[in-house]
Image (tube, rainbow, N blue to C red; front, side, top):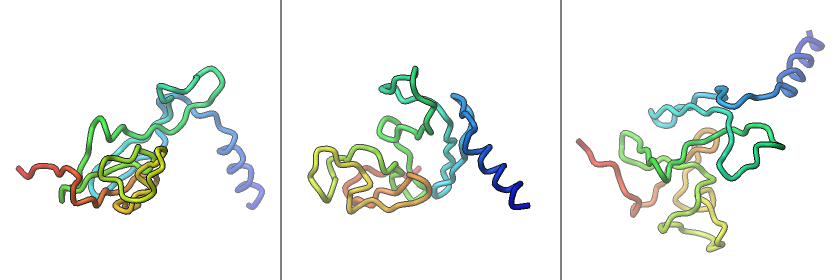
Length: 118
């Protein structure tokens, strides 16, 4: 049984992920995100394997049903960033960032734009 477990684990670790293949479906406060393998625009595809692609929530903001902004921790810090003023700062270093599942989080900044209630 242990041998079977380790052989399955090793097989999964050595599996080559393909571009477009589903990695995971994540539910963040009622919003569903499909994470797939692929390449970011600035990555050389010739020598690398596909990476997990997170949505660009700066280009297409997403909000919870309560109007809180959903962010990824690796997004560049916004103008409401509170914390270390390093030019390489990202959302995960902000005092307003509330971690959720995977690399997602909620922006708790009171100055962040909110979704309009309809």
